[in-house]
Amino acid sequence: MLLKTIKIFLASSSELKADRDEFRIFISRENDRLHKQGIYLEILQWEYFLDAISDTRLQNEYNKAIGECDIVLCLFFTKVGKYTAEEFDTAYQVFKNTGKPQIWTYFKDAPLNSGSITEEINTLLAFKKKISELGHFKTVYTGIDNLKYQFKSQLDDILPGIIMPDESLQKTVAEVKTSADEPKRNSFNEILTRRLMEGIRIYSPRAEKFLENASRMATDWETQSRFSDPAKEIIAFSFVGVLGIQLRKLMAIGKEESSVNKFKKYLENCQLTAKRILQLLCFSLISKLWDDRRDKNYVLAPDQTIICRNFFEDEFELDVNGLVSLLKTLISIFIDNELDFPITELNEFSTNLHAGSDFLKACSGLQAVNILPGNSSFTESDCTEAEIQLTTVLENLKFLVNYRMVSIKSIGYFEMRNTKPHYLYNYTVLGVDNKSNVNQERVNYAETPINTDAVLLYKGSYQQNLNLFPFVIDVNALAFEGGAKICFYASHNNTDESLNYIFLEDNSVVNIANTGTVKPGVDFNELLLDPKKFRDMRFDNVFNLFNEAKRAVTGIEDDDKEDDLSHLF
Image (cartoon, rainbow, N blue to C red; front, side, top):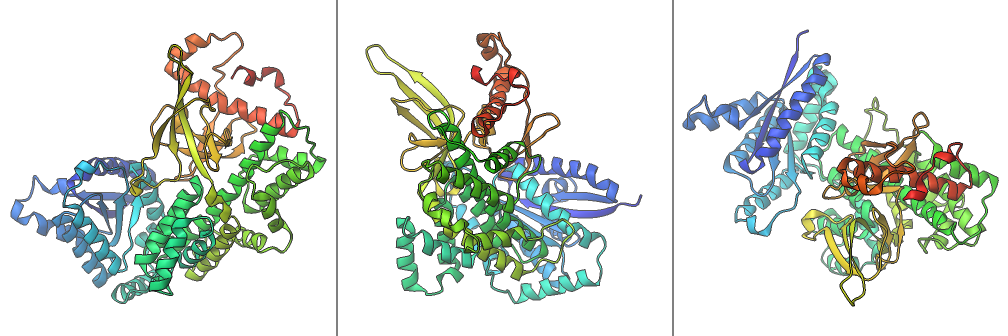
């Protein structure tokens, strides 16, 4: 088979050598996948030129190579080197003249020690300003895995146009060239930013102060990046935990260059953001029902029992409409049994679930978004409509800015002679952006214990909380790894009884099965000394507590109850 070679020029400063090396390995693995389609990815990067070309000719060879490439990928972190800047300029000029190469700029967003910051940071700030003025918007990556995921997604979308260009694709290139010469204002996120800032101002002093200043200086402040960028940060930081993460992703997509791929990602993430916020509400209500079973004698109607049981047993993740139906049922259970809501504002919010409400219309509109792989007919107007619908959903749930989320990583017990015992909590604050210079990892010394391996939702003090585990889990905490890897429960595999979770960063599936590590008569002291078995036990805890929650909420006993080991945890 004759292979179609796609040349990718990889440019970055020396500080990102590790990322470049990992990316090169990733490209090799991609070639294993793509060669069956007759595609070969050839990667060019500065190390390849060093041994063959003299120093005086090195940069000229760079520029020549760039002109022959299909994609130029630029990576940045704390600085923009002279050569990297020239590589971008060369690629941009060639693109304006010929419509290729495609230029993808990725800026790494990772923790940085203040001592490592030098004056070279100014080159980064100047470059960001420069490409913004060109209408070329940056993409942010948080780590090498995130970079690989985003690159693969973009690559799969543009491959057909590189492999088999037709008249329509040539027309698209011409339109992009015209757009490059006469930049069109990027209006993505403007509606969402303005309306949400207006909505959350009653809860957020930061939003209130911002609006006072911005409105005084510009009536259309949301159209100007010097105002809208800090406003977006306020919104993402204000909304509870993982919802802030989802909003940051949506806002980052909004800044990308106009393309069908951008429209598709924007629509997909509008829908995903609505799903995640509905899931969070449902998880909160189910967790509270589980807790209330200990001292509340509530009763479920037959139809309510069926819907709750389906939540625990469905083999497919619920879509927006399915989550709305579950939310209606759960709220009706609380109202029918006069139970206290875990989120007090849900009592008043429940009126939005009446037929014909703006909230339900917006959810239905987001459900109707067609983002099937074969659909490439997305337009900017589709994105605007989805943005309005998502904004309506978030406006009705703006009270969630009052809440926070943390992941409890570990707990230590301390008791000195003739003193009260204390507990040392290690936890991660969820939803805090690294570049906000706020440390996500925290430690607290307290007199009262708290649940281990927990993801907590709280208002005020995290010691007065609702535990969302095992519906929301931190895989890194369970595996004794740093950082947070937050996953939402998605579905139940009825073939092997395992559980499927969705990693919120890239929407990949994390499957958790019962390893059977904990058995009747097991020696826990021996088990705790084996790191692998101890880790397996923690993941088995997810599986067993999930089944315990199912029995408590629905009142339905499993056929394999005799094998249940949840009482051991």
